[in-house]
Each structure stands twice: as C-alpha cells, then as structure tokens.
Image 1: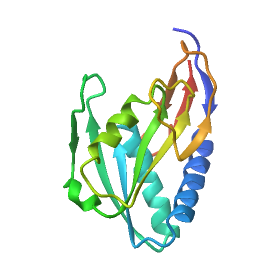
Image 2 (image 1 turned 90 degrees about the vertical axis):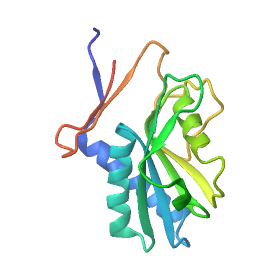
Image 3 (image 1 turned 45 degrees about the vertical axis):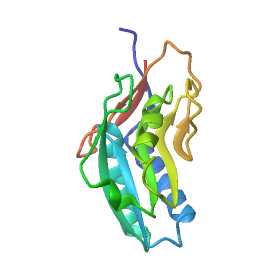
Length: 168
C-alpha cells in the first residue's frame, strides 16, 4: 500500500469541529432544539463531538440520534437508535466523515423523507469533490481536491487521542 499523507492532526480536527459547531449555532440561533444525526460509525463520532461543543455554547437543546446505513445496498436500508418522529418539525443536522460519491448522504436524506422537518443541513469533516450524486454539504471541515484513486482515511477514537485524517 502507498504511504499515507497526514492531512489533519488531532488538534486540526478539533479546530474544524469547533468551527462547524459555531456555524451550526449561527444557522440555528433561534431554535429551541436541534437533532444531530450521525451516520455510523465515524459520522456518529463527529456528531457526538459537535454536540459536546454545542452544549457549551448554544442556548438550544441538542438531541443526538445514530443512523446505520447499509452503504452497499442497492436501495435505502437504514436503522435508527431512536424514533424518527423526534425529528418532526425540528432542524436536523446530518453528519458523516467524508463526502466522496454522495451516496451515503443521499441515503441519509432518504431516512427523513416522510418526516416534516424545519430544515435539513449536512456536515462532513472532509469534502472530496468527487460526487456522483448531486449532494453538497452545508458545513465541512475542509474541501480536498484529490484524484479519484486516492482515498481519505479518517481515524477517530472515542478518547480522541489518536485522531487523524490521512490521504493515501
């Protein structure tokens, strides 16, 4: 395997998560509650960290749900760890680690199609600019122009001690 190039270290990842949290606050300062929906597994880790920052800076309540999506399925197959109806008439922030083709976020949108939302926003840590689906993000940690053969590796741990993003 080719050598991996470090593109974000632990501190840089946290700085980007902090910035995204402030952008979410600015976008939703009049809300009473927002729902942060993390796509398992890495998206949920990022979502949990955004929620922790928002709980320190935002006046609104943050509720978090996790979405498990079968990324290899030919149709939407998703499981949630909470009732989808808790999202009704609220702002939902859909979080994933990397936007590559856009398929995972497109499936993420599908989870909410039958629920009336105030608005749906998307967050990714890295936006690769190689979309096959017409999906864009509202908030991203960094935009990265790569060649299609390159892969972005996001390594996040519960403790955050060994967080890194690599290009390989």
